[in-house]
Structures are given as structure tokens and as C-alpha cells.
Image 1 (cartoon, one colour):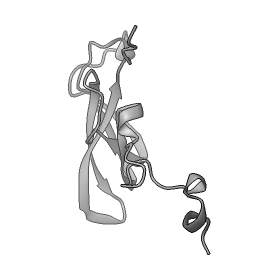
Image 2 (image 1 turned 180 degrees about the horizontal axis):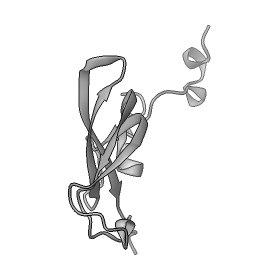
Image 3 (image 1 turned 120 degrees about the vertical axis):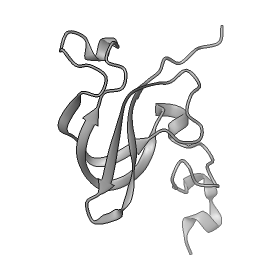
Image 4 (image 1 turned 30 degrees about the vertical axis):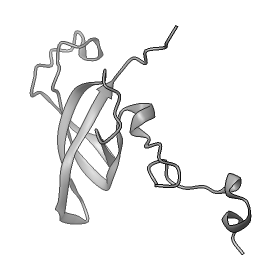
Length: 112
């Protein structure tokens, strides 16, 4: 008998599952979308300090740096999140699966 049948406190599941209902995007801003992927990162907000002093402009690409998996903005993303890069990807093993990966940053606002 699985432990989840007797003690749900020891159950494990995906954060986004109905049982947990706390998608990882609520914590880190983005959430797993697909793998394996291999693509270029495409800069969206070049003036952000993350890209400071490197000559990148909007639309600049960082070749091959989107590797292994694509994470993207989904339901539950913090409202004050900023998308720094938005990069098209295709799953290497299935050319029909494609999407946009997001590089993001946000500052959590702590209530006083």
C-alpha cells in the first residue's frame, strides 16, 4: 500500500499539481515547460543591470545559452516580475512542440 494512502503528509508531487496547488512560478517567477531544448537566448530588456556594459541591445542573441530545458511565465507568476529575455525554443525530440522561454527577475515585496 502506498504511503500516500495512509499518511498524506509524506506524499510528494509536483508543485503545480491539484494536490499541492502552489505552482513553482509563484516562488521563482517561471515554471518548467519542456525539455530537451537547445536555443539562443534573445534579449528583451537590454538596459537592465543584468546586461550592463556588454553592448547587448534589444533582440541581441546569446547563442546556445538556452540549454536543456525551457522555463516560462505561466499562471501564478508574481505581478512585479520583469521578463529580461524571451527566447523561442523547439523540443529537440519533437519539432511540433515549441514555445517561448523566459529569463526573468522580480523582487518580493514583504509586508510590514
